[in-house]
Image (tube, rainbow, N blue to C red; front, top):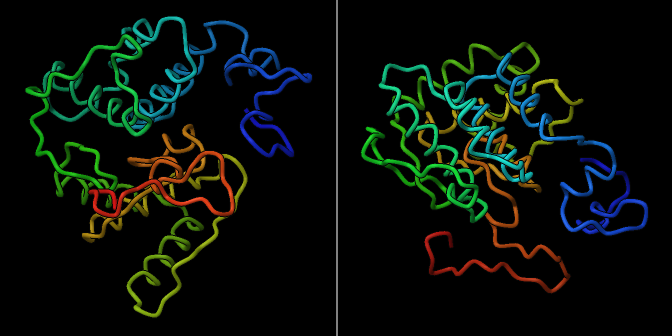
Length: 251
């Protein structure tokens, strides 16, 4: 949902002068959503072009939109969210649920909040490691390197130019540290961000991906909102302070 000239979340949820209780209600009032079939059409569209990891991110985003039956969505499309590596179906399901749970936990929610099955961690079979925001994921360094190589191979000419420029500056102690990437929707910015994430992780760097909204954050590898990652209050004021304790793991 996108509106021009909004200054806060309440204005984004206001339609025809009425403040809607949720973004879903606002979207329905604007005619952007019609019925529960929307969720199925969205999933079916993604299945045609997206990899399982991106379908899981999409699914996690959709459950926040309060579909009537998240369990039914999971039951119908769960195999499309399984990684295609060699493993039993039980392991693939556990790993898919684990990834979805990791995304939900970035926003202080659990699978059970949406009536989804919880993770049987005995089936994961991965090494557990802490990622940069303090959450947990199951992944090996070899898989990170393999993912980085695969993504790098698929970059187009313009994406590769930006990728090389940023990586080169990262290795230069006096290099630039701030880059602004602009492009129209669908031009491949998110794919470039993912390539940079795994490329830097493959070099042993710590990487934290953040976005201003929860929906945007779910598109990024282990993404989190700026507010959660840095403890920034939702209502910003000039004298605000981060809510993260310096003595904590996140500090």
